Image 1 (cartoon, rainbow, N blue to C red):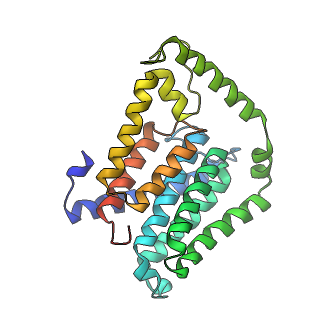
Image 2: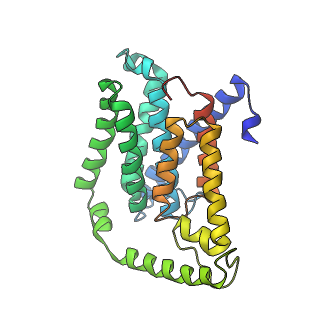
Length: 268
């Protein structure tokens, strides 16, 4: 349905609404949930558990970086401090990185590494001025890992990974009940925190093939836009450790795809 919004006014309204709501969510997560309430991991409670929040934050970070790359001509004029819009974007970028550090979802980190590496290879060769943006993001993430002890402990803690492996095994047994069309909502199903095992367990081989067909037409619809590919790389890589296409994360993915696809440029 979102593709029906064709006018520039609707596009700008959706884009502004997304960034304003993102700013509100980040402010709540950082200053209220984490700092004031002193919760162990940053979570935007309306989105869901910390890993779901991590998926949302990762999609938002990749989208914001892509959006800044689309605005390359404004960035390369070296007048960022005089451009209120770019100041706003870089402020949100900073808050996003802080939120990602405080959230600590390992699957989200792996997805970010894969997606940012793709963008670095694709755009770093085009213009070395883009390297500043990637350097800025990478530096803040590395500093966060070094100075935030809770994040270091979480990254090195194997317990939750073993628990996830158990969930993967359980749901693969669920898949065996009906490998062709899946076991549906049998009692054996428990969210395995894995996008591909979820699809196999609930819809079988037919569902997994249909999913990849959907991905193909998604890329084709946006004419293989490089930014769209970056979103997919993140969502699929993170999907190894989180059921990414669900609830708010799926809605966010659709919204950022629309905004990016509408505003794509010749470098896409």
